[in-house]
Length: 210
Image (cartoon, rainbow, N blue to C red; front, side, top):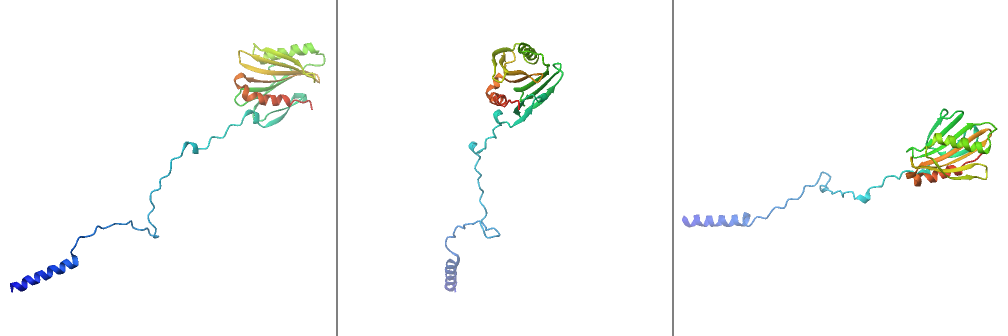
């Protein structure tokens, strides 16, 4: 009886060894697929924006590129092309019987100014110069100095001037036309010469009586 029992135990041990024995394998877990059968998205690293990738700000429009607008002086005395975006001012009180019209740049560092005075017929060349200088002293700095005085072929007189106190420079043209004395002046802050002188020269060149 003992021999049968031992034999049965040995047979049972052999069956267990054949069915479940041996070293167990390590399980490998895979990511479960998504509902559409694709693998889950991996985290995508977004590259940081490099300094060179940024677009530079739009360059401000330079003074010389401003769109010009036609201008006619009071009493239809003459015509100019002036910067269309500059601010317009009109004064009829600062000088008696005189209209003063100004175009001022948006940053106030440059000006185009027109002065028209009803002077009558009896104003000679010398008196015309005296009246013009008097108007300039009223409108411009007290330390104004004339650098050049030039008579132009069309009869106008050109004065190039500057002011140490206000640190500005300008050019004034004047003449008598149809019983009116007129002045046409451009000036700018000296620190802004490079920015505004090209535009002011374009205004000067646009002068015409027609």
